[in-house]
Amino acid sequence: MGQIVNEVDTRSRLDPDRIKYIAQSFAWPRGLYWVAYTAWFAAFRFGRVYWKDSEGVGWNAVWDLASIAVPFFVSIIWIPKYYTRRFGVFRPKPGPMPNPWTTKQKLLFFLILGCYYLLGITLDHLTHSTIDPVLLLSPFFLLAVVLVDPWKKLRSMPEITLVVVSAILLALVALVPLWVPDAVRAQAFWRALYAATPAVIGGLTIGLFDHITLTRLIPKLPAEDDQ
Amino acid sequence: MSETSSQLPSPNRLIHEPARLAILTVLASCAAADFVFLQGVTGLSKGNLSVQLTNLEQAGLVMITKEIIDKKTRTTVQLTQQGTEDVEQYWRTMDEIRARMAGTEKREGEPSSQFGTNPRTQPA
Image (cartoon, rainbow over all chains, first blue to last red; front, side, top):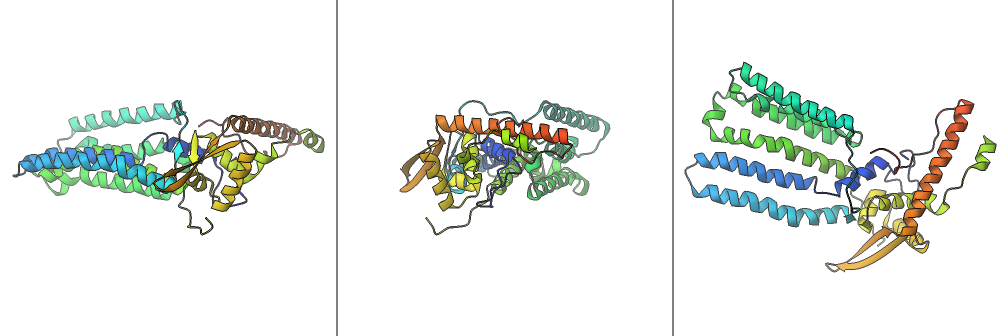
Protein backbone atom coordinates (compact mmCIF):
# COMPACT_ATOMS: atom_id res chain seq x y z
CA MET A 1 0.00 0.00 0.00
CA GLY A 2 2.89 2.32 0.76
CA GLN A 3 3.85 1.80 -2.85
CA ILE A 4 0.45 2.74 -4.22
CA VAL A 5 0.93 6.31 -5.36
CA ASN A 6 -1.87 8.51 -6.47
CA GLU A 7 -1.06 8.99 -10.12
CA VAL A 8 -3.89 11.40 -10.84
CA ASP A 9 -2.91 14.19 -8.45
CA THR A 10 0.55 13.51 -7.13
CA ARG A 11 0.51 15.76 -4.10
CA SER A 12 -0.17 12.96 -1.65
CA ARG A 13 0.67 9.32 -0.95
CA LEU A 14 -1.82 6.74 0.21
CA ASP A 15 0.25 5.57 3.15
CA PRO A 16 -1.72 3.53 5.73
CA ASP A 17 0.47 4.73 8.63
CA ARG A 18 -0.15 8.33 7.62
CA ILE A 19 -3.93 7.79 7.55
CA LYS A 20 -3.85 5.93 10.89
CA TYR A 21 -1.85 8.73 12.48
CA ILE A 22 -4.23 11.38 11.14
CA ALA A 23 -7.29 9.39 12.27
CA GLN A 24 -5.82 9.03 15.73
CA SER A 25 -4.73 12.66 15.92
CA PHE A 26 -8.30 13.81 15.36
CA ALA A 27 -9.86 11.26 17.69
CA TRP A 28 -8.82 13.05 20.88
CA PRO A 29 -7.27 16.40 21.87
CA ARG A 30 -3.64 16.47 20.86
CA GLY A 31 -1.14 18.83 19.30
CA LEU A 32 -2.11 22.40 20.06
CA TYR A 33 -4.49 21.36 22.85
CA TRP A 34 -1.52 19.92 24.74
CA VAL A 35 0.36 23.13 24.17
CA ALA A 36 -2.53 25.17 25.63
CA TYR A 37 -3.03 22.88 28.66
CA THR A 38 0.63 22.71 29.52
CA ALA A 39 1.13 26.42 28.93
CA TRP A 40 -1.53 26.90 31.60
CA PHE A 41 0.20 24.46 33.96
CA ALA A 42 3.61 26.03 33.35
CA ALA A 43 2.24 29.56 33.85
CA PHE A 44 0.38 28.49 37.00
CA ARG A 45 3.46 26.87 38.51
CA PHE A 46 5.58 29.83 37.49
CA GLY A 47 3.15 32.24 39.16
CA ARG A 48 2.94 30.18 42.33
CA VAL A 49 6.69 30.47 42.84
CA TYR A 50 7.45 33.82 41.25
CA TRP A 51 4.62 36.03 42.52
CA LYS A 52 4.94 34.58 46.02
CA ASP A 53 8.25 36.44 46.35
CA SER A 54 7.02 39.61 44.69
CA GLU A 55 5.88 42.74 46.43
CA GLY A 56 2.50 43.12 44.81
CA VAL A 57 0.13 40.66 46.49
CA GLY A 58 -2.67 41.25 43.99
CA TRP A 59 -0.54 40.05 41.10
CA ASN A 60 -0.82 36.49 42.34
CA ALA A 61 -4.59 36.42 41.87
CA VAL A 62 -4.43 38.23 38.52
CA TRP A 63 -1.77 35.86 37.23
CA ASP A 64 -3.71 32.78 38.41
CA LEU A 65 -6.88 34.00 36.72
CA ALA A 66 -5.11 34.91 33.48
CA SER A 67 -3.12 31.68 33.38
CA ILE A 68 -6.39 29.72 33.55
CA ALA A 69 -8.63 31.97 31.44
CA VAL A 70 -6.33 32.52 28.47
CA PRO A 71 -5.53 28.84 27.70
CA PHE A 72 -9.17 27.90 28.45
CA PHE A 73 -10.55 30.28 25.83
CA VAL A 74 -7.77 29.45 23.41
CA SER A 75 -8.54 25.72 23.70
CA ILE A 76 -12.32 26.00 23.39
CA ILE A 77 -12.57 28.79 20.82
CA TRP A 78 -9.40 29.39 18.82
CA ILE A 79 -7.96 25.88 18.48
CA PRO A 80 -11.16 24.15 17.23
CA LYS A 81 -11.70 27.00 14.75
CA TYR A 82 -8.11 26.80 13.59
CA TYR A 83 -8.26 23.01 13.17
CA THR A 84 -11.50 23.24 11.16
CA ARG A 85 -10.12 26.00 8.94
CA ARG A 86 -6.74 24.37 8.41
CA PHE A 87 -7.60 20.65 8.27
CA GLY A 88 -11.35 20.48 7.74
CA VAL A 89 -13.80 18.35 9.71
CA PHE A 90 -13.05 14.78 10.73
CA ARG A 91 -15.55 12.82 12.81
CA PRO A 92 -13.86 9.85 14.47
CA LYS A 93 -15.46 6.43 14.55
CA PRO A 94 -17.36 5.69 17.75
CA GLY A 95 -15.65 3.37 20.21
CA PRO A 96 -12.05 3.09 21.35
CA MET A 97 -9.25 3.82 18.93
CA PRO A 98 -6.68 1.07 18.35
CA ASN A 99 -3.62 1.52 20.53
CA PRO A 100 -0.56 2.23 18.36
CA TRP A 101 1.86 1.16 21.11
CA THR A 102 3.18 -2.38 20.93
CA THR A 103 3.84 -4.33 24.16
CA LYS A 104 7.58 -3.99 23.52
CA GLN A 105 7.29 -0.21 23.22
CA LYS A 106 5.19 0.01 26.39
CA LEU A 107 7.71 -2.10 28.35
CA LEU A 108 10.60 -0.03 27.00
CA PHE A 109 8.84 3.19 27.98
CA PHE A 110 8.26 2.05 31.58
CA LEU A 111 11.81 0.74 31.76
CA ILE A 112 13.13 4.15 30.68
CA LEU A 113 10.81 5.86 33.18
CA GLY A 114 12.01 3.57 36.01
CA CYS A 115 15.70 4.02 35.14
CA TYR A 116 15.20 7.78 34.88
CA TYR A 117 13.83 8.11 38.41
CA LEU A 118 16.27 5.61 39.94
CA LEU A 119 19.22 7.38 38.37
CA GLY A 120 17.84 10.76 39.50
CA ILE A 121 17.41 9.61 43.10
CA THR A 122 20.86 7.97 43.13
CA LEU A 123 22.53 11.11 41.77
CA ASP A 124 20.68 13.21 44.34
CA HIS A 125 22.07 11.07 47.17
CA LEU A 126 25.60 10.92 45.80
CA THR A 127 26.15 14.57 44.87
CA HIS A 128 25.89 17.70 46.96
CA SER A 129 25.39 19.99 44.00
CA THR A 130 22.56 22.49 43.72
CA ILE A 131 21.75 21.02 40.32
CA ASP A 132 18.49 19.09 40.29
CA PRO A 133 19.47 15.58 39.09
CA VAL A 134 15.96 14.74 37.86
CA LEU A 135 15.94 17.92 35.79
CA LEU A 136 19.44 17.22 34.56
CA LEU A 137 18.34 13.82 33.27
CA SER A 138 15.15 15.12 31.69
CA PRO A 139 16.75 15.85 28.27
CA PHE A 140 17.78 12.20 28.04
CA PHE A 141 14.30 11.15 29.07
CA LEU A 142 12.80 13.35 26.36
CA LEU A 143 15.08 11.86 23.72
CA ALA A 144 14.36 8.33 24.98
CA VAL A 145 10.59 8.86 24.78
CA VAL A 146 10.98 9.94 21.17
CA LEU A 147 12.96 6.77 20.46
CA VAL A 148 10.02 4.57 21.53
CA ASP A 149 7.49 6.72 19.67
CA PRO A 150 5.11 4.37 17.77
CA TRP A 151 4.93 6.87 14.90
CA LYS A 152 8.70 7.16 14.54
CA LYS A 153 8.52 6.32 10.84
CA LEU A 154 6.38 9.39 10.16
CA ARG A 155 8.60 11.90 11.93
CA SER A 156 10.93 14.11 10.02
CA MET A 157 13.72 16.64 10.52
CA PRO A 158 11.60 19.54 11.95
CA GLU A 159 10.21 17.31 14.72
CA ILE A 160 13.61 15.85 15.57
CA THR A 161 15.10 19.36 15.61
CA LEU A 162 12.38 20.53 18.01
CA VAL A 163 13.10 17.70 20.44
CA VAL A 164 16.86 18.23 20.27
CA VAL A 165 16.47 22.00 20.86
CA SER A 166 14.07 21.33 23.79
CA ALA A 167 16.53 18.82 25.24
CA ILE A 168 19.37 21.37 25.00
CA LEU A 169 17.20 24.08 26.64
CA LEU A 170 16.26 21.70 29.44
CA ALA A 171 19.92 20.82 29.98
CA LEU A 172 20.81 24.53 30.12
CA VAL A 173 18.08 25.20 32.69
CA ALA A 174 19.29 22.24 34.74
CA LEU A 175 22.86 23.52 34.66
CA VAL A 176 22.01 27.11 35.66
CA PRO A 177 23.44 26.70 39.21
CA LEU A 178 26.85 25.99 37.69
CA TRP A 179 27.35 29.50 36.34
CA VAL A 180 24.90 31.39 38.56
CA PRO A 181 25.66 30.01 42.04
CA ASP A 182 22.60 29.56 44.23
CA ALA A 183 20.40 30.99 41.49
CA VAL A 184 17.71 28.42 42.00
CA ARG A 185 17.60 29.01 45.74
CA ALA A 186 18.04 32.77 45.76
CA GLN A 187 16.29 34.00 42.65
CA ALA A 188 12.57 33.54 42.20
CA PHE A 189 12.81 33.51 38.42
CA TRP A 190 15.10 30.48 38.26
CA ARG A 191 13.16 28.67 40.97
CA ALA A 192 9.98 29.29 39.00
CA LEU A 193 11.60 28.07 35.81
CA TYR A 194 12.67 24.90 37.59
CA ALA A 195 9.11 24.39 38.82
CA ALA A 196 7.61 24.89 35.36
CA THR A 197 10.09 22.69 33.54
CA PRO A 198 8.19 19.37 33.88
CA ALA A 199 5.30 20.98 31.99
CA VAL A 200 7.69 21.99 29.23
CA ILE A 201 8.91 18.41 29.00
CA GLY A 202 5.49 16.81 29.23
CA GLY A 203 3.34 19.00 27.09
CA LEU A 204 4.79 21.84 25.10
CA THR A 205 7.42 19.80 23.31
CA ILE A 206 5.24 16.74 22.70
CA GLY A 207 2.25 18.89 21.67
CA LEU A 208 4.29 20.89 19.18
CA PHE A 209 6.01 17.69 18.06
CA ASP A 210 2.60 16.20 17.19
CA HIS A 211 1.35 19.40 15.59
CA ILE A 212 4.35 19.76 13.29
CA THR A 213 3.94 16.14 12.15
CA LEU A 214 0.24 16.72 11.45
CA THR A 215 0.80 19.91 9.45
CA ARG A 216 3.49 18.13 7.44
CA LEU A 217 1.28 15.10 6.77
CA ILE A 218 -1.64 17.29 5.71
CA PRO A 219 0.09 20.03 3.74
CA LYS A 220 -1.73 23.28 3.10
CA LEU A 221 -3.13 23.11 -0.39
CA PRO A 222 -2.51 25.93 -2.84
CA ALA A 223 -5.47 28.20 -3.52
CA GLU A 224 -7.50 27.19 -6.57
CA ASP A 225 -9.76 29.33 -8.66
CA ASP A 226 -11.83 26.50 -10.03
CA GLN A 227 -14.46 26.50 -7.28
CA MET B 1 2.85 -17.16 -14.16
CA SER B 2 0.34 -16.57 -16.95
CA GLU B 3 -1.75 -19.50 -15.70
CA THR B 4 -1.83 -18.02 -12.20
CA SER B 5 -2.62 -14.54 -13.49
CA SER B 6 -5.60 -15.78 -15.44
CA GLN B 7 -7.05 -17.26 -12.25
CA LEU B 8 -6.56 -14.14 -10.15
CA PRO B 9 -9.71 -12.55 -8.72
CA SER B 10 -10.56 -9.19 -10.20
CA PRO B 11 -10.66 -6.20 -7.82
CA ASN B 12 -13.57 -3.78 -7.97
CA ARG B 13 -12.59 -1.39 -10.79
CA LEU B 14 -14.54 1.50 -9.27
CA ILE B 15 -12.53 1.27 -6.06
CA HIS B 16 -9.24 0.34 -7.69
CA GLU B 17 -8.75 3.75 -9.30
CA PRO B 18 -6.06 5.55 -7.18
CA ALA B 19 -7.99 8.76 -6.43
CA ARG B 20 -11.16 6.90 -5.40
CA LEU B 21 -9.16 4.37 -3.39
CA ALA B 22 -7.51 7.24 -1.50
CA ILE B 23 -10.91 8.80 -0.71
CA LEU B 24 -12.44 5.50 0.40
CA THR B 25 -9.43 4.58 2.54
CA VAL B 26 -9.65 7.90 4.39
CA LEU B 27 -13.42 7.54 4.83
CA ALA B 28 -12.97 3.97 6.13
CA SER B 29 -10.83 5.35 8.97
CA CYS B 30 -13.52 7.73 10.26
CA ALA B 31 -17.26 8.14 10.77
CA ALA B 32 -17.39 11.14 8.39
CA ALA B 33 -15.11 13.77 6.94
CA ASP B 34 -15.70 17.02 5.11
CA PHE B 35 -14.49 18.10 1.68
CA VAL B 36 -11.57 20.19 3.03
CA PHE B 37 -10.27 17.29 5.11
CA LEU B 38 -10.51 14.83 2.22
CA GLN B 39 -8.75 17.27 -0.05
CA GLY B 40 -5.93 17.79 2.44
CA VAL B 41 -5.36 14.11 3.13
CA THR B 42 -5.70 12.82 -0.43
CA GLY B 43 -3.99 15.78 -2.09
CA LEU B 44 -6.55 15.82 -4.89
CA SER B 45 -7.57 19.03 -6.60
CA LYS B 46 -11.04 20.39 -5.80
CA GLY B 47 -12.35 19.53 -9.25
CA ASN B 48 -11.03 16.00 -9.25
CA LEU B 49 -12.24 15.32 -5.70
CA SER B 50 -15.67 16.66 -6.57
CA VAL B 51 -15.93 14.42 -9.67
CA GLN B 52 -14.72 11.33 -7.81
CA LEU B 53 -17.15 11.94 -4.94
CA THR B 54 -20.03 12.25 -7.39
CA ASN B 55 -19.00 8.96 -9.02
CA LEU B 56 -18.81 7.25 -5.64
CA GLU B 57 -22.17 8.69 -4.60
CA GLN B 58 -23.80 7.51 -7.81
CA ALA B 59 -22.38 4.03 -7.18
CA GLY B 60 -23.94 4.11 -3.70
CA LEU B 61 -20.58 3.84 -1.88
CA VAL B 62 -20.69 7.20 -0.11
CA MET B 63 -23.34 9.53 1.23
CA ILE B 64 -22.84 13.27 0.75
CA THR B 65 -24.51 15.78 3.04
CA LYS B 66 -24.42 19.54 2.53
CA GLU B 67 -25.12 21.98 5.36
CA ILE B 68 -24.75 25.72 5.81
CA ILE B 69 -22.47 26.70 8.67
CA ASP B 70 -21.50 30.35 9.23
CA LYS B 71 -22.86 31.24 5.78
CA LYS B 72 -20.57 28.66 4.17
CA THR B 73 -21.49 25.31 2.68
CA ARG B 74 -19.90 22.35 4.41
CA THR B 75 -19.89 19.13 2.42
CA THR B 76 -19.67 16.09 4.66
CA VAL B 77 -19.01 12.63 3.25
CA GLN B 78 -19.38 9.22 4.86
CA LEU B 79 -19.26 5.64 3.69
CA THR B 80 -22.57 3.88 3.23
CA GLN B 81 -23.10 0.31 4.44
CA GLN B 82 -22.51 -0.88 0.89
CA GLY B 83 -19.38 1.27 0.67
CA THR B 84 -17.96 -0.22 3.87
CA GLU B 85 -18.63 -3.75 2.64
CA ASP B 86 -17.20 -3.08 -0.82
CA VAL B 87 -14.01 -1.56 0.58
CA GLU B 88 -13.58 -4.55 2.91
CA GLN B 89 -14.16 -6.88 -0.02
CA TYR B 90 -11.69 -4.93 -2.16
CA TRP B 91 -8.91 -5.37 0.41
CA ARG B 92 -9.74 -9.06 0.82
CA THR B 93 -9.40 -9.44 -2.96
CA MET B 94 -6.11 -7.55 -2.98
CA ASP B 95 -4.80 -9.69 -0.11
CA GLU B 96 -5.79 -12.79 -2.05
CA ILE B 97 -4.03 -11.57 -5.21
CA ARG B 98 -0.94 -10.69 -3.22
CA ALA B 99 -0.92 -14.07 -1.46
CA ARG B 100 -1.23 -15.89 -4.78
CA MET B 101 1.43 -13.77 -6.43
CA ALA B 102 3.75 -14.27 -3.45
CA GLY B 103 3.17 -18.03 -3.72
CA THR B 104 3.99 -17.98 -7.42
CA GLU B 105 7.09 -15.84 -6.91
CA LYS B 106 8.27 -18.12 -4.11
CA ARG B 107 7.99 -21.09 -6.45
CA GLU B 108 9.77 -19.23 -9.23
CA GLY B 109 12.41 -17.72 -6.90
CA GLU B 110 11.50 -14.15 -7.80
CA PRO B 111 11.71 -11.09 -5.48
CA SER B 112 8.74 -10.02 -3.34
CA SER B 113 5.44 -8.77 -4.74
CA GLN B 114 4.89 -5.22 -5.96
CA PHE B 115 1.37 -5.15 -4.53
CA GLY B 116 0.55 -3.09 -1.45
CA THR B 117 -0.86 -4.36 1.80
CA ASN B 118 -4.29 -4.05 3.29
CA PRO B 119 -4.19 -1.17 5.83
CA ARG B 120 -6.98 -2.88 7.79
CA THR B 121 -4.96 -6.04 8.38
CA GLN B 122 -1.67 -4.31 9.12
CA PRO B 123 -0.67 -3.91 12.74
CA ALA B 124 -0.76 -0.29 13.93
